[in-house]
Length: 482
Ligand code: URP
Ligand code: ZN
Ligand code: ZN
Image (cartoon, rainbow, N blue to C red; front, top):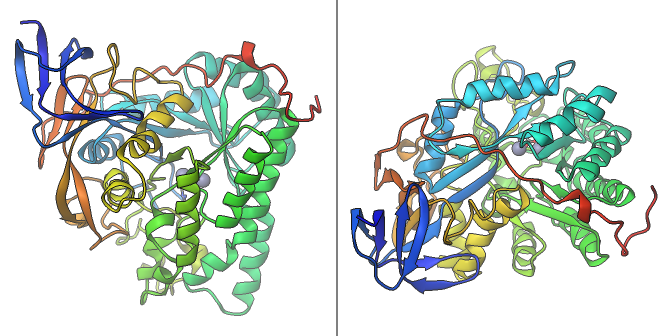
């Protein structure tokens, strides 16, 4: 037999092309793409389906430490299982450094949590919360060498945020080593000041969370993050852009020639500020940071996706259950009322990211299928150093596929999803287009309702650099400060 697997009669769609061809796989790699192939141990008939590169989910929180009493609802097993059922073959969660902890030790902790437990291939971004001189000059360069070539810094949340000077230090190391820094851009002082004022006024229901995290809070920090990146002359990626005002800062920076990448998420394209008004604790299901905005904001984000302001759309899957004394409502069990300060921010969504985006982008005609693939798989693979192993269908790439039924209509019900959480903020949303089969390195791990993969089949990805530091000549477009 020439091949381990042939996928026949499907329509391949990559970030650049759509065409009818068969795909031959051997040893987990794509070794042939041709009009017609024969001679395999296994043949999958993909008639009537799109054959897409497996989704690359590059923003998700798995097994991170509790926020107060509220615990992550996903382990690597449940989180990766859910991702696989949603058409993803790679995910990149975070290894979260606690204050006072060595970064390399944090990586080891997360490696142990993931090893033997993931259904899909994985890498880690690092969360740098303690930017000591040793972390900046020794641990970060070492981690980058070891394949952890991107890291996130927070401009808010007192237990993880670092200040602007420390962000400059992190950016300096990223520039020197060729890594990519992701920035959570919200102004911490403004959030806490606004939060206190709202509390004094007795305005504590979930909807006031969005007031404490208003557009200006995100816009100011986004502009500041861009300025820090300009000073060091190194690229950044602004994660989870929710506000059109923040997006306009990104667009402005890009038009100036700065190397600013941006991500948005399904929650900012589907959920609305009014969702917080649902009765009782229900509003807490939609609290995430930054929050979903008013409906008119969505159209502006869509326009920016069309215009190329955003490189990637990821779920920011951050699974906190709704019920129970380790869930979003833990406070209710202590006799409390819904209070935005006591509700852990984060929404689950790893399994429905691709269907939600396919529905709006392709089924509803906003973008073509190639842009869908770029925004949900290829661009992330390029940004985070795993292309062309991941994120495309090409000779030599890993045989990672999502077989897609573009006609299937599905009503999202959490009862049918596979994460460890107990709700979906998208409950009842009807989407057209669904991943019916997920294939990881030539092995089917999800087949139309049946999980056929196993924990441990996913392996660690040592990622390449975001950019070769040798190319990192000072940009002619920006004023160099150092
Ligand atoms: O609310 C959110 N987004 N929680 C996850 C942590 C983060 O900031 O990405
Ligand atoms: Zn964040
Ligand atoms: Zn996040």
